Length: 82
Image (cartoon, rainbow, N blue to C red):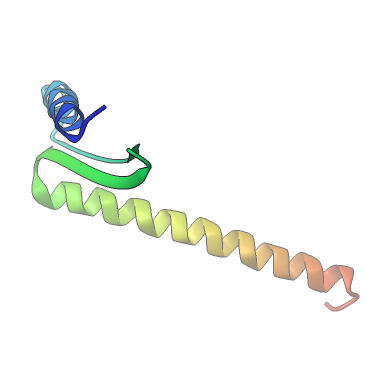
């Protein structure tokens, strides 16, 4: 899929979803000719779209940190530390 085809597809998908919701933000990664690229497209309330993206990043970071902390706690318990 070319960049133009991807842009057209993202536009179509966002418009279709936008008929049913207040805001849509789509982030994609693709490999074109061996190069990885990213593209985003959105419609609707800009503040809502930024808020959704921020929430996604913060939730993911929280999940990663929680898992790392849990691993440290489990390691310390298996080493006999409490």
